[in-house]
Length: 283
Image (tube, rainbow, N blue to C red; front, side, top):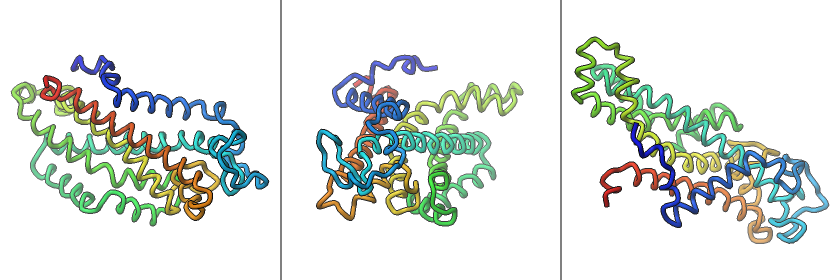
């Protein structure tokens, strides 16, 4: 395997990449230790405190409170876990499904390749968010249904990416020799082809994590994702939109959390692409 995978020093090669890496580490720590970090864990879980409704940022509540008097900092901290989990789950399942189909299509070719690619193109003919919206409309609102809907709209991108890479590797002499020697197809696919398509796969996964967080937040914003009293960043942005001019902190800080997560993952994706692309590395 490429020795570049053994080094993580590139994550701190410049200020922008270092910022993204530290931001993601912070989100991961907050997601894991949220119940112990949050100033008010019960309010983070959804317990209301009407007496403290719409208190602005200050010493008592650093980021203010929402319409039910819940500490917004606690809510944002509790929202980090579902945001990261749904991103990881969607990308993981989409990558597994898409990679498996892409490897089969790229290696076997013929009618199998045509069938898989025509099916993926059918899904790709719709914008991902629109397809997710249609799917979750049929499944019903909820975090799990939103996760399923996002997987449905995401796997074809991995199929197309891996299929192209697999066809290139499958044409290499060492793959043809292995097949000619009678090595089973599954061994050739796993041992020779899959190992040589991991670089673009990892880069795509890193870039998609932020996009999935934004898509999940968008579904929650229109009421088709996480449901109250769940601590969800997109849902909190929606809850504060009607009072944005008076109680600006509700939507602003929740939206800022989404912005930072998406930005950090996008920067990480660019850093991975630059690191693993030998042409860019030489420059």
